[in-house]
Image 1: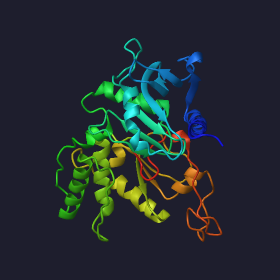
Image 2 (image 1 turned 135 degrees about the horizontal axis):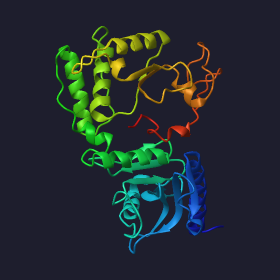
Image 3 (image 1 turned 90 degrees about the vertical axis):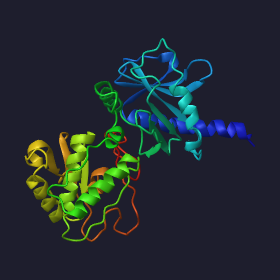
Image 4 (image 1 turned 45 degrees about the horizontal axis):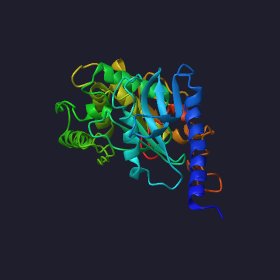
Length: 323
């Protein structure tokens, strides 16, 4: 019977195999340190990278554009990943001075079992670990590094969310003003999940249009997904965004930013707001289910799991979108 040490090593090897596959699917070139070639692709994940004395050996050191930007701590399935974040922190602070890095300490830390992955962005005002679908693509990390170079004081969306300008109440009903202010207060306290409940006829879409405008203009949101449960509501929402006059500029929202009513698998890369009813079909690459079958169920009503589209680069956690 194998001892506990051998079982642990086998479990970690299994986790690393899955991590290798996920990294490759997300656009990373995975290499052993002996075969290091930082020009092999836009992102290179180097296994077993020795750091400065006292900082150990990173399971994976992440390079983007030939510069180190982050690290991954690999653990066997079942490990409580929030309990090993300190190990990732050692990697992020242990890069030898002679090696190139755009930001020190390194900003992007991951812990993963291959089944579960958590991520912390050290550029956030209060860095907090969150669960992801999978790893970010190299291009995503490169864009975040670029954002830091452009504005070191507000390098991430969470930093910008904490510094939103005061809301001008002109044109808003009191309930709408209260809803927006409370939502932004939640963002300022690093609580990204929020629920707004408003009665029928109280202007929910108008409120959402105001929120979307502020998130895009002041927080630098790349894209906002607006979900509706019926196609006719999607058309109504698109019309309302097209007619929405921005409060400080006066021009229509759609004159400033692209709004897409998603009716296929093709997302407009420059759309700031995407209105959709078919997210499950889009993620699973399946046809839209018939109206008699609820989305997310097969014809025999057994739950189905949507396949992860890793081309989006791990845009969020398993339960919410991320910026």
